[in-house]
Image 1 (cartoon, rainbow, N blue to C red):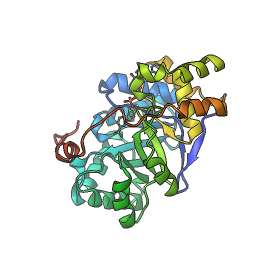
Image 2: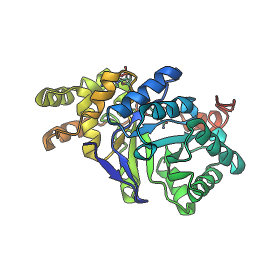
Image 3: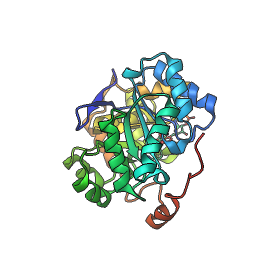
Image 4: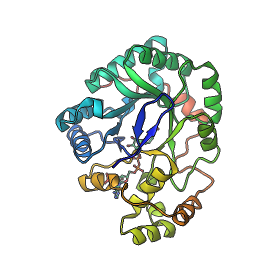
Length: 285
Ligand SMILES: NC(=O)c1ccc[n+]([C@@H]2O[C@H](COP(=O)([O-])OP(=O)(O)OC[C@H]3O[C@@H](n4cnc5c(N)ncnc54)[C@H](OP(=O)(O)O)[C@@H]3O)[C@@H](O)[C@H]2O)c1
């Protein structure tokens, strides 16, 4: 039974979902979403940037799973931030997803006109187009700017998070403010170095499961939401099969000890500030 995490606005979010970043082939994306929902997933994570929202919508409909059983997330890119631009962009996301609402809408990056975009997200909640709003890649200093002016608080911060990068500065702040940490790169982007760590390999052998399942179970027990990406139906099914066993305290501590000083993915802030507000300004399909 897939566990869910309560969000600060009263909704519940499944702890494991399917991420579809870089799944740009329409048929492959649709098939992956359908396979995930058929094998029990109820959380799908896409973004305007991924250019696959239409395929996600088709996968949801092809699965036959009722829309109200699914927790659907999408994200606005900085080129879509602005008083009017964000309002239009939200309606376009709903149109591409062919859904009257999304469960969670995130600001993808903390650059550009964040205040106007956040107000548009709040208005979308009021209008019933969005059930919860949150952020992605926001650091403590970004949240310190947003929170005092927010009428509706962010429920999650989706960030790089895995045993090699455990966000030591951000996590205590998120806990303090009731913001759920959601892990992108939950498997370290499939890193062999991470999945080959002796503590992870030993736990896998002890439980008769794979290193990937150990890492996903670690996310669940740490209280995170994780959205592993896969287009392989066997991987998709296996990644959800992490709810009928538990890692011991010693195994959890062994994996906690793998944290390093630096994230796997690094982009200087100045590059982010210059490039991201302009990127992807061409019309989405
Ligand atoms: N907000 C952001 O800025 C941001 C940034 C990056 C990612 N994300 C989100 O996070 C999601 C996940 O990130 P990610 O895709 O970069 O990394 P990831 O989920 O950590 O790793 C994906 C890799 O692991 C492999 N994999 C998955 N399950 C496996 C299994 N059971 N056994 C062996 N290999 C397995 C996948 O290959 P196969 O397909 O062959 O299984 C793929 O190569 C994205 O799809 C996206 O939704 C968000």
